[in-house]
Length: 231
Image (cartoon, rainbow, N blue to C red):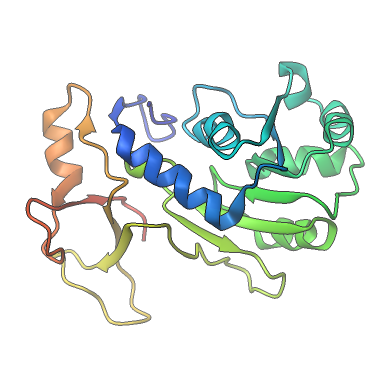
């Protein structure tokens, strides 16, 4: 998979099949996906989060409806597709959810909303909670296989939404510049370890060594963790 390139040139990330399987099995349980679910896929295939939209319904025995390109840019067309398909799950960036609301979409109490790809503003999150069945804030870099943590939005959070807890077989660390654990409430960098870690960057050995470092907190031999750069 390739990163979005939001911080520069897109980087090829070497993910393993077991990491994708771990991710999908975890998503089945939380936020949850069942055989009776219908997912409308709106994400371009070049974006890593499309992996959830393509494979989770197939793994779960559910149904996938691939939105035509024009519907992903037109809130009215997308809202019509949601209604026509009787969608129960949609994953999209905050920009897409805003597009829907701006088109006059009133929400759907039977819809499970997954939001990721960029920070979810609290105001938008609370509006989604008021209009939809469930709203989930998704967090994770491509380097740790799409999403690494999930949080169900309640609607009473403050200005900054939590990113939730790690998915299955995933560990988060908050570390200082010396890679020591920081005290609760103190600022630090997010490091992620576990089954989701990629092998590294394609043909970028120096960058791989910089971002994928030894995990001194794990009991597993040769365990590594990823430096997200997020505080």
